[in-house]
Length: 353
Image (tube, rainbow, N blue to C red; front, side):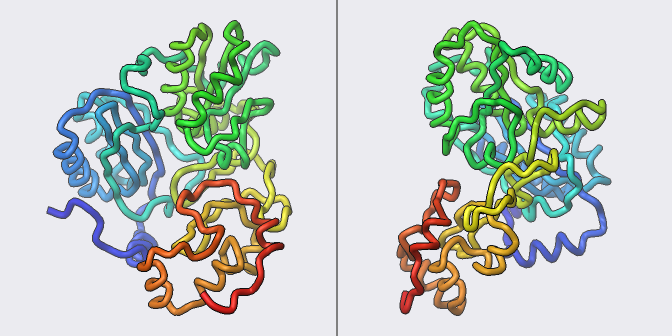
């Protein structure tokens, strides 16, 4: 049995490009107790792979979180397959608003301690005691009240390129960091109507339960997250209160909701909201880069990274194999907030590595 991908990225990309069948990008999650994770993981991989499903699935004892690409002509079969599991029957699918075949190149099913890491003991609060789910129409109506408090439950690099108007935007690197930050931010607002939102809804499930545990009474969350909000406003011809791009966790790195550009290129400061990963595989830093800087920097974040990718591949591999930190700005936590404009001003050409 083949229980994991065995091809390199270039082979996978070519295989996907040669496909004739359109694909649907979708996501789903559910908090539910799962057992025998090893067996369950292998079973999911085999059954999903048989249908040509690509994407990333995380399972834990507390549930499942999946972002997937499904062949359009097998979507009904995939729905039927998911429904054969009583734990997932009728779980809502959130469909991408943009048609894009190349969201994922391979299938990954991984076991995690939690589907959403919160850094808290399992018994610290009841994750099933969640807030009220609001449709897009209900959400827009609730936002109209001046007494409503809207909170973005995503990380800084997500809200930087798009967010709901007048929302609180915690500058966190992780969800684990964000929970106490939000609790502190809202400490004098327990009598307010709280609206929480995230990409697909899974983080808000935990965040709403966390706030209710801490005494907030009127906690609400955007049903299906930004992904389903975008679908609903389009279907119902509603005004979008979300502006800019919705950051997504696949190779697209974003879906445009409105034409507003809220962020700037991290290298030159020009208006831009295109996320990229540094072309130097040892760095892989996530940052915003405009087309001019991408051409100038060869897809890299700093001059040192451009020097590295200019080396022959075997030399690059030797450097990575030696586990050297190749330059002062290389990071292995890919979603930090580097001041690349300042770094580039300080960077000097390197004579040797």
